[in-house]
Length: 126
Image 1 (cartoon, rainbow, N blue to C red):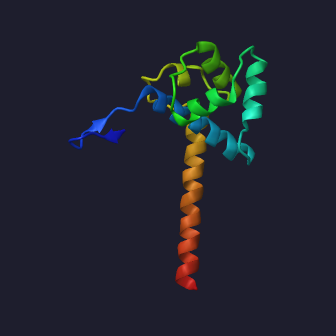
Image 2: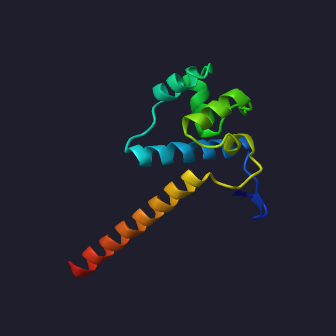
């Protein structure tokens, strides 16, 4: 959410909300496998589902700019690629995260916290 003119929160645009969810999927996949998911991989995996994806469309989907993608075949194929229920990208009214994504986020938070603690100890001791 962003702050409106009077400091009240404004809801995210549907494009930005979709981009945030896509980026959660990409971040979780990158953390799990140790490297980022490339556009080429996305394009190839979607093609196996009979879905085309241009580089421009992919980037505006990830950035939350341009037209809102509502194509159920595209969104469902993306969810299958990341092994999450299609409702994650199709039902934007739900705040529920897929269990696999929530577990990855919890892991990353714990990892970051331990790194901060280790750094603080090194600074304090050193």
